[in-house]
Length: 170
Ligand SMILES: [Zn+2]
Image 1 (tube, helix red, strand yellow):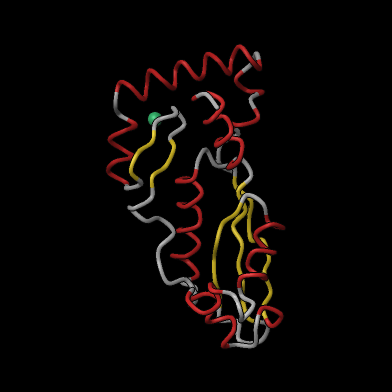
Image 2 (cartoon, helix red, strand yellow):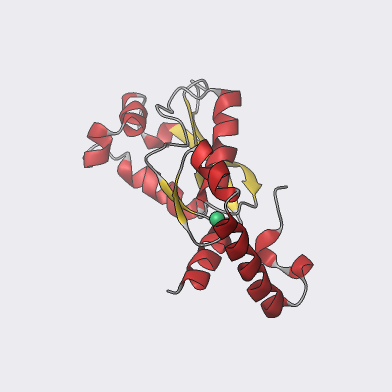
């Protein structure tokens, strides 16, 4: 994949980001918040990984908690809200807002971790910290690349308003 199609892919992938929760059917304070771009696939992953004989079920705090409390069938996983995000970082920030508000017991680490590397809209990989991100947005390189990208998109879709990938946050 060349750079343009790579970040078109990333932008396209996150344009429908679903924030979801997993909570216990009766102990509703047992809750987890996550994000996905494919709810059904993520549902099946969570269901499979929480089966008590998988490696994840023994090691991962979320699946350990699910198993300790009756297994996946005693939990409900449902979408909370859909956001149009530009990239992984946007998606993580939306997730973190929900985590900050709901303070779910089964999340053991923040949505945004500085060890992540994310792909910016301009096609450049950057470290996923707030300062790295903000500094990057202010670089001439980012601004030039975004301008180039917008020109490509403009040629492709004619009007910027029609671009499906830049609907912005809801
Ligand atoms: Zn950039």
